[in-house]
Amino acid sequence: MGKVVVVGSINVDMVFTSDIRPKAGETVLGNTFSLIPGGKGANQAVAAAKLGADTYMIGCVGNDSNGEFSLENLQDMKVNTEGVKIVDNAPTGVANIVVADNDNSIIVISGANFEVNKDVINNNKKLILSADMVLLQLEIPMEVVEFVVEICAENKVKVLLNPAPAAVLKKSLIEKAAYITPNEHELKLIFDNQDTDSVLKSYPNKLIVTMGSKGVKYHDGNEIREIPSKKVEVVDTTGAGDTFCGALAAALVRGDSIEDAIIFANKAASFTVTKLGAQSGMPELAELL
Ligand code: RIB
Image (tube, rainbow, N blue to C red):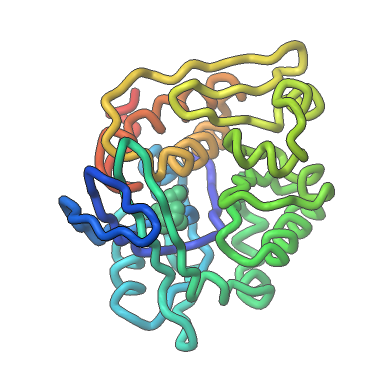
């Protein structure tokens, strides 16, 4: 069993479902409301753990009921939370998610996620260095993401960077990460609107572009490969990208080839979209196999 260490965000998702997405200045009556564990970091950790990886989370939550709820959930999902710090000066991160028209809109209030600093990383350095793969996203401060990538590069620990939410990345970050998993929108921002195929050719076996129902694209060193997505009944796409990243890490650390890992991760992501909430539909290993 390979070891995955996730350094990232932990949120509580406030999920509203509605037939209509409200426009600016409009009030609409929705259908349901749920409080669901989320955060890109926590979601990826849960996906990796459910799919068999020995998984550890490093991050911060507030000293509040949302923090307790998030920690209990991670522990229930067999994610080790010894690297999660409870801070007094900020509330646990929250996300407001509107699910309408088979798609979502999300506003994140970072709260304690922005308390993840270099001290938190240094206090967990041993854990980071013991990882077979470190997973990062962009819901904690960018300088901390860069710091972790630097430590990993110096110590030859592989990093899988999920550049979400979209942000411009330093060239050194792109060079030092072993795998980068943007969606099409994030890819355009990072690579200055360049054509997808030419960017893929420049980063063979590193850049893996997720395209939702259109599948996944990467360059295998010889040619561009397209892995199709399984057709499913979509309920909520929240967390599909997170499931993909957690599953990809779980497959790579157990020794799968990059092609097999992408096929596995893409199948896992297709399970997630069939249920409401980022984590509710994430498959267990046996279910997926
Ligand atoms: O990727 C989905 C996640 O983005 C949600 O769980 C929400 O918390 C935001 O971080």
